[in-house]
Length: 553
Ligand code: FBP
Image (cartoon, rainbow, N blue to C red):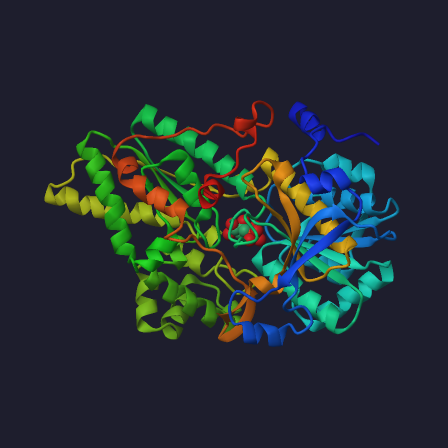
């Protein structure tokens, strides 16, 4: 069979040996779980305890010494869930190597296409040569991913049945907050049914919003942000060279603005919008437009008809009047799904919107450009939400700033030129070859997951901490999934979910940004991070995000 062609960089990266926390690297057999005090959920303790009686209150565990116990061969299943994030393949490699270290006869099964593979029993056995082919590579293509929600008892029963048939006694869910919320529910159900199936999660998402006091970062955030920073830096150099375009760059991040904030801290663009600040200050769309247009005008007065604006993907849902309109739309489309499917023309759909939305929401909807209206009515995600990555917020802002500048031009208060280019950076970064940080972090997370399973633990999220220190000083362990849960209102019901980490306006990353943004707006203090470096001096290759460095400083 002919081998797949690989680039020289791929060949060199295949030889990279990811670093592990010292305790795992030196002992590398099954590990002893040192247990802390019983824990509590971040909020709504009474309700969460009642919903998760079998997995609530577990202690935080750390792995710092080997276990004397001989662990028999383990059979483990793994799924990759949700959006791609750089380093997923190294989670699998770390899990595989860790399981083999615990017992050379252990086996790893990869369920295909995300949670649906686990329910429909579609899997492959992950063996040495296949795992080797994917070490230190980007993407999730080794087994694929998917967004099927694993949350119903009938699905849990299927998972238990399929795993039992294969002799699998533990499942690793590699996913974001929603997937790990489902992992928590599955762990509870398996414990309640005394099924013998353990469930362990790994924190993944480029959005960077699955983090808390114990989980310092989700994997993939580091690499993807570095890719976007390189591209933004290049665009800034182009803008500053040609001096004729305003570039509007939308950056991925379904809800939180961590990616936009990280890119701002690394590249110093002229304008960065932070959704959480917009929501907190209850800014209207008009106020946001005025802010952008004023900076365009001020720069024009200094002879600078160019600049760079970063726009977080989720912005539109944080602007109060838009949020209201989108929530109403989501609810109406869900409640009238069958009828809505019969509507063919734009006119029919707009009549439906006018009929079902409140006067305020309907007004906001009809004030949007036609293309944005169509995007707002497009297919929902599996949670029934609008897919913000499909809404061209950057174009909406451009159109509205153009209108504002026209007004000022007519009044004689603006005389500049406003030529724009729009970009959307998201998919470009999600499958990049993991940076050294993500390669090491993901491998360590997978390896730690194997230690959690080897110690017979369930309902835990694999955790590797002390991330701003060199990898050998990282601390491996597990955080109870129930500890991260709280109740949130979903579709009119209080629902237990892992608390999402949004940008904190009193946190160091935001304060650092806020302290500099006025200067960055008018002066050209662009910083050019350049491409990810895989080989070279450690201070260039192993550096992690500004976000975590500031958070831990
Ligand atoms: P996860 O939270 O599943 O990691 O995915 C995040 C994300 O990359 C968002 O940034 C983006 O809004 C979304 O996925 C895009 O979804 P899709 O891959 O379905 O287009």
